[in-house]
Amino acid sequence: MNAKKKILIVGPSWVGDMVMAQSLFKLLKLQSPEMIIDVIAPEWSLPITERMPEVNNSINSLSKHNHLNLKAIFEIARGIKTAAYDQAIILPRSLKSALIPWLAKIPIRTGYRGEMRYGIINDIRAFNRNTQDQTVKRYAALGLKKMSKEPSIIYPKLDVSIKNCKRIFKEINVNTERKSIGILPGAEYGQAKKWPASYYSIVVKHYLSMEWNVFLMGSKKDQRDANAIINETDCMDNDNLFDLTGKTALTDVVDVLSNMNIVLTNDSGLMHIAAAVNTPLVAVYGPTSPEFTPPLSEMAITLRKRSGYSRVRVGDADGGYHSSLVQLMPDEVLLELENIYKKYL
Image (cartoon, rainbow, N blue to C red; front, side, top):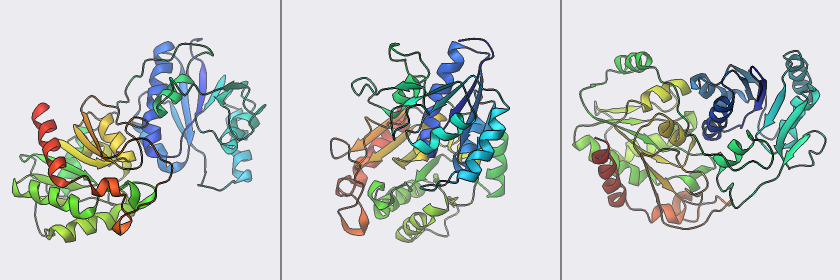
C-alpha cells in the first residue's frame, strides 16, 4: 500500500465489535505505517477509538439502531468528500453503512456482500466460512487484497491512563493496597446472555470475605443487574464494594479494568475491553459462542455448558436466563477465577 494513503473505516455499532476491529487497524498500519486511518461509527462506540493509537480521527455517524436518517447521511457524506479518502472499508454488512462512502465518492469501497450493495460496494468480498470463522478474522481479512491468504490476527491493545485511574480511585476512596476484582454483569440482548445475579452475588461475597475490592461496572442499562447483585449479597454498606455502573465514561472503564487483578464477565463489550487491556479474565457464555467471538487475550478462560452458536437469544429459564448459564455453578467459576489469578499473579 502507498505511503500516507487515507482510509475511512465504517466501524461497527457495538463496543465489543469496535474493540475487535482494532485488529484490522493494526494490520493496516503493519502494512503501511504512514497510513492515515479515520473511523466513522455511532457516537456510543467512538470513545473506545480514543484509546487506539492507530486511529487518526473519529467521526460521529449520527446513526441510530434501525433508523435511516437520510438528511444526516447526505450532510456527513458532503463533509467526508472534502477529505479525499483513497479507500473506504465498510465493516457492517448493511446497505445503510455503505451509503456515506458511496455518496462521498470514495473511489475504492471495500466490504462484504450483503443487502444488495452491488455498485455501492465496488470491491466486493465474499465470506470464506471455513477460514473466517470469527468476527475478528472477517474484519481483518478486509485489510488484505483479494485472494490473499488469511491474516494472522493481531490482538487489540488499548491505551490506558494510569493518571485517570488514580483520579477515579481517589474520588471513590479505594484502598489500592487491596487486590481487586471487576464484575461485569451486563450484556446486550437481555437476560439470555447473562449469568444469574444470584450467582454473581456468591462470587461478590467470596471476594469481599477475603477483603478484596469488588467493582461492579457497566452502563446505565446494567444498573438493574448491579442492584440485584447487591441486594442478593446484602453488602450495600461494605467499604470494599464499588458500584460504578452508569457512573463512568467508557474511557474510565478502560482505565479501571486495566487495574483489576482479575475480571468476571458475561460475553459483552466490556469483556472485550478487559481482554484488550491485558487483565486476566473469566468469561461465561450462554447461547453465543466463544469460538465465534472469544476474548482476544492469552489471559482468558471461557466457560460454557453447551455447544454451537445460536442467533436466538431468548432465555428459557426463570428470570429470563438461559438454561446453560443457570447450569454453570458458582463453585466452578470461583475455581477458574482462582486458577487464573494464581497463573498471572
